[in-house]
Length: 198
Image (cartoon, rainbow, N blue to C red):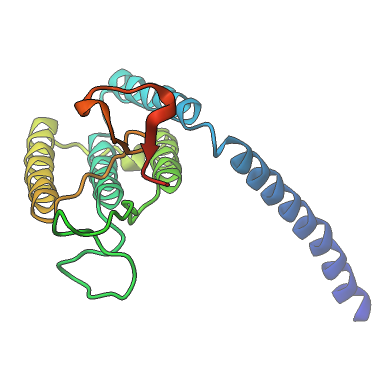
């Protein structure tokens, strides 16, 4: 009897070792591509194009596409929302400035860009695999789903934009903030520019 248990344990050993090695290799490549946002998004756009061509070619799987659209909309809301919502939470941590005299605080997303990209790409890959199984090809009238998704998108984005206006934040930064001390607001030479980090 001891031999049977020993064989099962020895068979599980190489399998768990292989699984560990694969997950480490996967994490290694994820870590390598993390700083290359432009190339990551180009690769994701390629995956999106392959998925769109697949759905167009088979003329089906609209319910999968609708579910994918709802999931992407949910990710987008997390990407555009601050980590601490001033309406919902009172926190001792960094909050969004509400007055012009408030100290500058960087925008911290509820869903960071890398996690947004990773979930976005993974969702399209899973949806692509689902298009090979006919059980997911539920016959629906796709224009109604498309209209419903557009209405949902417009209403959600209108709410999100009004939240941005109310709390005066922009979820994107376009480089370092620069102030000009002299020269009457004209662009000075590089030596007289003072950055916001000083």
